[in-house]
Length: 493
Image (cartoon, rainbow, N blue to C red; front, side, top):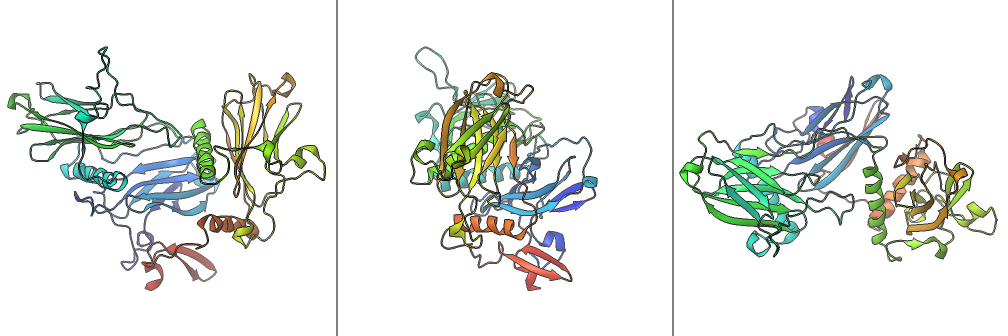
């Protein structure tokens, strides 16, 4: 990640910033063979609060290095770059501190994840995206042949030839009940990993197996999942496919096409747009819901009571809500609420920050109202003083509140429901979610605490070793400047 003027630039691979041929640059390998396809499919940049500043979906036909450039919004303090490789997953880059003079006044955050440069693209691009879905299908579902949609009409991509040079695919259109009603495949957007369910992509092949049309869809789109396209001249048979994120790949019927039903002006249609052109804000409720879902996911990996532990069974981990007029706060541990020396208070970093097994602290606290809406959410640093605390405002209309906390070692704990009176409500308080995150400062001990926690979560084997050197971080000293770069080429020249 580099900042030039008021623009943030993220590139993948050390060679992209050194210009040295000996330094590695991640490839952008385009292929219709799922076994050869290898590219950076997404790059995004987050600010100091984890809010997305900008994001872009890349096509494998783009030239290496994979890159993203965007202006920096006003108020940004830090930037961190992330990338996702189709084969090797997500990697986080460096964090860069931003000065106010490097930001654009009044600029809104944006999201642009378009894989194709327009509504149409070369057939090779369409083949590439289809090859990627075949690769995912084989890896996640263990299959190499698409399921017959006639055995599962909800997932079947039904193809209709209109006879005017166009055709439409709708997923689930033939899923007709006894009363004549159609139940289309859902397009369900959710922050819950178990609740997200949608048709990721639809594509159509001709009698030669060539791509006629292809489209990726957003989970927030309305059902039915649909692809409309013009029929290429020379097409005599068309077959539609649909990929469901939960259930895999389904094939529709082989449909004959009359010459009169084709369009002489048709081109291969590759529509890979997967993000609407709307501003992305870190203060939206979806961020809190996603972070809440992550706390539940991490707790599910423990041997403790699911989906959370009641605080009454463990007073050391119990998140207490304390109301004093319009001042509301959460503290973790009975002693923090009672003030009695004999009552326990949960620690924040017990002793030696150099020893991962000693790391023990509250990493997350949030508060919900009577309807389950998140009122406040905070991620904590292990270097903060005990007791772990979250101050919050209670908006009008709130009748009760309940706190949750997540311990890095002992999982998720639910506190008791606390009734709210009129004196506890703060006039003008904002209802909804506002993520708060700790400010670490620059002390070495604070950094060491985070490192120890990452090592603890990594397990007994510690940090992984990459014998290829591609993912290994190397430290380079140049005068009075220390630089960390990832990739063997950075130090081998």
